[in-house]
Structures are given as structure tokens and as C-alpha cells.
Image (cartoon, rainbow, N blue to C red; front, side):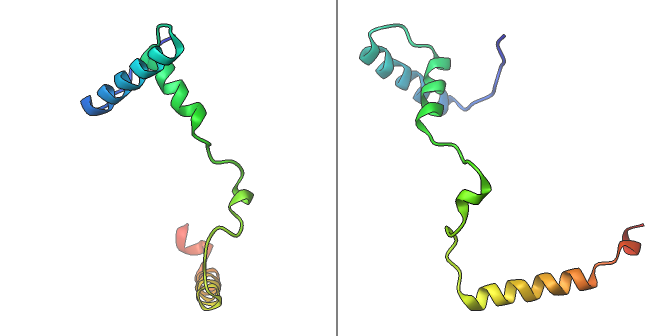
Length: 83
């Protein structure tokens, strides 16, 4: 099954260029689809949200302000406002 997608001319040209490089290295015909698969396999996609733990640099003051804002929001929230 094939699917059409819209990409810019510049992106298409880069994909064709990559397909040409892959074809020269692999010594076989390489399609645009193969070039996209190559890019997707090389790029590590995001995993679980827990893998982000500790990756956000934040001060204790910023944590305190964020928690205070969340508590205020939850205290002000009322289901009757939305019904």
C-alpha cells in the first residue's frame, strides 16, 4: 500500500540526495522510501515519559512557584463552571 505525503521541494531534493549516497554505498537501488526508513532507524525516537526524569533543569524556587500555581488552580477549579 502506498500513501501520498506533501513535502517541500527542498526536502524532496535532500531525500533524493540521501538516496543517491545510500545507493552508492550499498551498491543497489535505493528508493525514497528506503531513505526515509534509513533516517527513522538512525534517529532514536522518544521512549517512555519516565526517561525524561531529571532532564529538566529547574531551581527549587521555580518548583515552589509551579506547585503553588497548580494548588491555586485546583482550589479554584469547579465542575459546576463547566456544566
